[in-house]
Length: 160
Image (cartoon, one colour):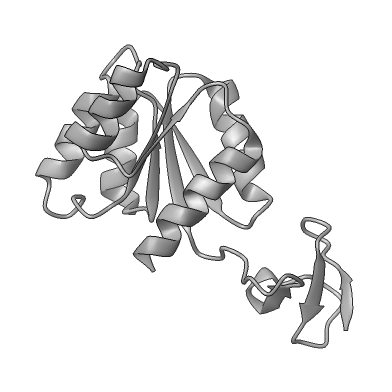
């Protein structure tokens, strides 16, 4: 039975016979399973940006946890071991490159993919990020919701 999902309004097919949307039992009408169980940690010093990322990714079924700044973010990544980290570069307490280096030097965090989301939009910054530091993707602010979704789904699709 196809019906609108109570969670996000997409057209879904329920495999269980109940009237409440249980995301773990739903398949989206386009054939893609929702991103259930995928945890994304967004390390950012601006709460508005964390809220925006939570809104965009939450509608696709991702669980998004925000961390205000590099120190809090690194601690949250160590505790939660997320499927993906979204990382701002310019933060006051610990910059994003320091967070990234500490993650890659920690055996238990090394394999977690990282997408940099930053206002550093010069091409040299992107080259340094993608080709020297080897981040998984590099998105410049401002970005569109579709750009973020495509990047996250591409990276997590490679990990699965």
